Length: 456
Image (cartoon, rainbow, N blue to C red; front, side, top):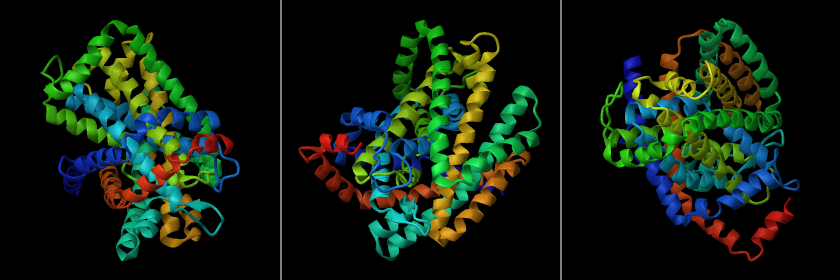
């Protein structure tokens, strides 16, 4: 079974299906939106972190809380272990292709968030519910759109149990056990209780917690990585040059590194970049739909910054730390490679402690974001009555994940995670004309900047 699932996963996430589809969709949206993610980035960051909210807008949480919820789900194990894996197999050049994925992925995330708000619906409890399962159903329309929406909801609800739950809780328990010897079952009990307190309160509870927790965890990790980079500042120019040149020439074997061609750099850079920022998977539209706003464009701009922060900032910190220290030549892989790099820049054995704390913070926050994604998928499939039972099962599986061997669960959920992207990408391309028209109409208003200011 594991061999079969691995073969399916390799195909779904391989160079002939999702990788080119996700990358080309992002490139297409970048072109039709005229590079919006570049010339509107500063305005988007202002909306997200200075203005932060639109009090009179319809919705459940602020712009900033919706962004924090999306960041909670995406800034995860992939930012620590995933980056290291990309470099291990693809060489330093893989970091360049992760950057490319992030840059074009910002246009994808913008479109997902725009459509998430544009086609959101009010559920039986009066809360906003949106995302691909709604914009496929009501935007694409007809039996085809309804089928795509249901497929996304099914894949999303299942994937949340694995990639957004048991895999994350297992990573937390294993990291704490390896670093400090705490029994995995005990860690399971603690994080299950902590997560239950937040998840059972719904999106307002999740938004309030992540808006306070996520900035702390990201700043903690960035400062630690900057320390490593500054400690090896003399190697930074050479590291940046290597990342760019190796992206197009490949990396020769050196030390414990077996060598990698250009295709491997592209494959692992793009795959791990997408895995990290989730642009194209559709999850960003689910979080965006909960935001208080009367204008889809404004929330879409805020949501776009999530990909920028995840990939162009956090991923870059990990990648640069690994390359400037020379740890990438060690032959290590995953979190141990990141730990090795941090140990070469931080005093004593702080590297292992920082990476472990980072893994714990990132994985725990991912649990919270995916709990919301999964329950919104259930709302689309079975109505509001299915939400609370789903939350209870989700919470129970957090503990299960800490005490079971999860290789098969990981692979199966990885497939479901990838399959979420297929109906979503179809919808993004089919609805791209609507996104472009309404985006241009918004920015063609002579007072659009004043409208954004007044909305605060």
